[in-house]
Length: 110
Image: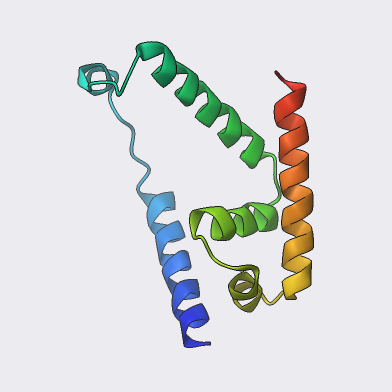
């Protein structure tokens, strides 16, 4: 229970920090960075990342939070349930539906 409480505090502090401190990388700095592998791979990976970001923006705040905790925080459904006051099965159901919707939307635009 202590871990869930501590993680909740850390999550709120991080969210507040990033809301207040949005940083932008100047274009000239981006151009000076070396690419890992062929440029086409980097461009495709960046396009995929941008596309996924747009799809994630279309989710509700609760859905984005659950996806972030599961795939960004690598938490189990049980840990997520303790953090969010949802049941473990509800977390699993929501994540299953969200991932399915994201997959469908990803395939629609190909």
